[in-house]
Amino acid sequence: MTPEQNFMRKIEAEEKIEPKDWMPDAYRKNLVRQVSQHAHSEVIGMQPEGNWITRAPSLRRKAILLSKVQDEGGHGLYLYSACETLGVAREELVAAMQQGIAKYASIFNYPAQTWADVGAIGWLVDGAAIVNQVSLQRTSYGPYSRAMIRICKEESFHQRQGFEIMLVLASGSPEQQAMAQDALNRFYWPSLMMFGPHDAESAHSARSMQWKIKRETNDDLRQKFIDQTAEQVKVLGLTHPDRDLKWNAERGHYDSGDIDWDEFYNVINGNGHANRQRLAHHIQAHEEGAWVREAMSAYKARRKALTAQQAA
Amino acid sequence: MTDQDLRQATQAYAVRLGDDALILGHRLSEWTSRAPFLEEDLALQNVALDYIGRARMFYGYAAELSADGRTEDDFAYLRDARQFSNLLIHELPRGDFAFTMARQLLTDVFSSLYLEQLLRSTDATLAGIAAKAAKETRYHLRRSREWALRLGDGTDESHARMVRAIDELWGYTHELFELDALEQQLADAGIGVDNAALRPAWLKQVSAILTEATLRVPEDSWVVRGGRTGYHTENLGHILSEMQSVHRAYPGVSW
Image (cartoon, rainbow over all chains, first blue to last red; front, side, top):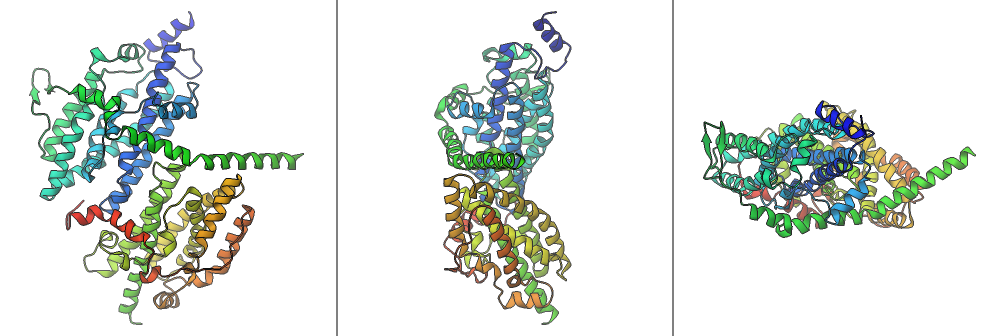
């Protein structure tokens, strides 16, 4: 059996591919792209919610939000580690993002303007992410799969906290209800777009499916999310932003209105409110931290030399 | 002092300690997504979270003692700068990473000594909060000590930044060791801590760490005080206007 045949045999047999196994270059590349994009999304995703930690309207909410944002950073760490097993250092991955070569989820280019947006992000954005991540627990690359299993455990807490924020607002004062509705209206469609283009138009989908990097198609995952969200909107007692949403008994799914893909590509291509802000923020923090990282290595090197000297 | 007086004094004392924790926690939380690297971002958020948690415990106890329907959030969100009683060192802007870590070092050494005493409080609730906080502070101090060494004995730039940070902070440290009448009464009653007695041990520990970090203790040439009486720097007003903005814009609702 050639290495390639053996690789395909493992994929077929649902055996995980591990870092030291032979894998096609394109498989490795495809994974680096997807896993690093996922890691960057976790890290950039700290910004829109982080922007509300100092203004959270109760101490309980403040503590929960802080710990949630901290989890996102932790997820970024697991994913960078998973990506490093493919032979690319974190510094390189981060540099690629800062140069705009590697992407992060475009949803984070939308501004978090109100407290209800924090709820909507937890509920819808994390909710969409979970649908995707649950499916990725079965991805063919071992380290990625294990990172996903770990992440999924924490994400469901995130979605609950987001939904709980929305539930309190939706059953609160008229102003709070309006705030919740407005956040839902702004974040609903962009969350649907998180699943990526329709299957027919998705650049990387077919190959990723064949290699079992992806386990379900963009459209199937999106449908799951549409279905679960429709029920949750009812529980909240808010108005669904999709006027064309209708239960289709034959399919056993909700039919929905058309997604405005022009808007999606418009934001991806740099015209969102926060595209420049998110990258500039990340670069600024990185640059301002340069002297700290330098001091760390200088100190470490000095200690090492000293220990060596004492040993000699 | 009557039991009622003592109860009132303890309530005010719990609010003070809650204010210290909340304001420092706020400053630390400002580092979210801004730290020099991802692991440090998470660590700073961890410490911030400990302080927010500590604030909630102290305010929760203050609310219980006031028995007038107030909650932890009333203390955090519905008082103005003049009513806040945190020590000034906690409200200074986060500055650069050296400033933040220098402040942590000075306050962590203080907290470790302070909490060790508060553990022995005859007030069981305060002693309980201190027990939990003391564990956290041991971890905080290990971190801030390590950072002081790395930055003090790192590069010329990091050393210079640490020197500047310690200099800028030093005048605010004296207040950590001053008691007003209320605190003296509580210390005498075995409820509160006699923080004036902690200074020699604090100075000794801080000096030892600074020396190891190739830094030195500044001259005692200036002193700023006033936090406990609500005489704050201009920074606190900005913290509160940000922190309280949403809560105050929608009075009386739940979150």
